[in-house]
Amino acid sequence: MSPEFAKLLSQHIGNAFAKQLAFADVLGERNWGVNISEGRATFGDDL
Image 1 (cartoon, one colour):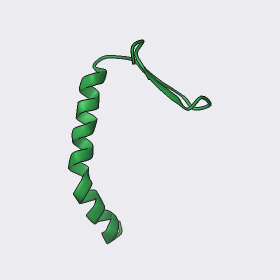
Image 2: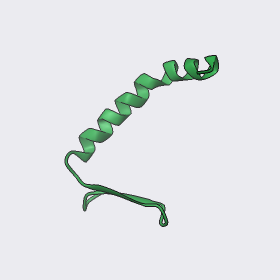
Image 3: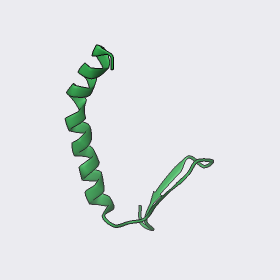
């Protein structure tokens, strides 16, 4: 791992993880799917 990457990672990983946890709270138990050809991600029937 390059020193530049390691520095950026250490500066931003906490914030990125907090956002991931918040997103998981919003999603709950919803199913999700990705349609690559449409460029669309869906989360349950309401998101």
